[in-house]
Image (cartoon, rainbow, N blue to C red; front, side, top):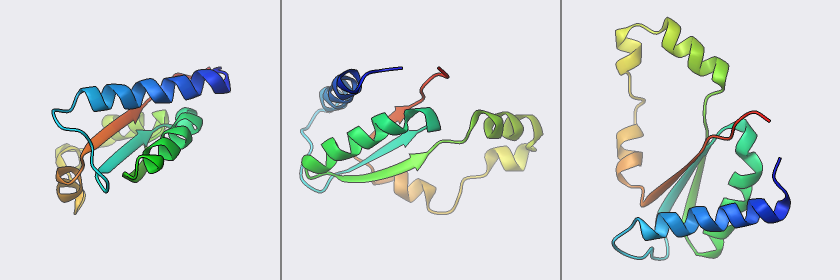
Length: 106
């Protein structure tokens, strides 16, 4: 769908936007999470390289598939909808940035 050059430019813009949204500059060792769906793997890979080059610590998490999302929201009861995995709050509270990539089907 996108050329390599377009993906590289898109990665640069996403990092620029994340940096502009902050009141302070990133510092070495800050933690940035990249959440992505299967269709955005190539862009997630480019972002990881750029984040590592900036000496930031990276975390990657693949999002649930469309089918998994549909099944969850159509079948889960209230307790399952309210469930937060152990350690999730602590992890989120220690992040210095997050990028979500939800690419459309081609």
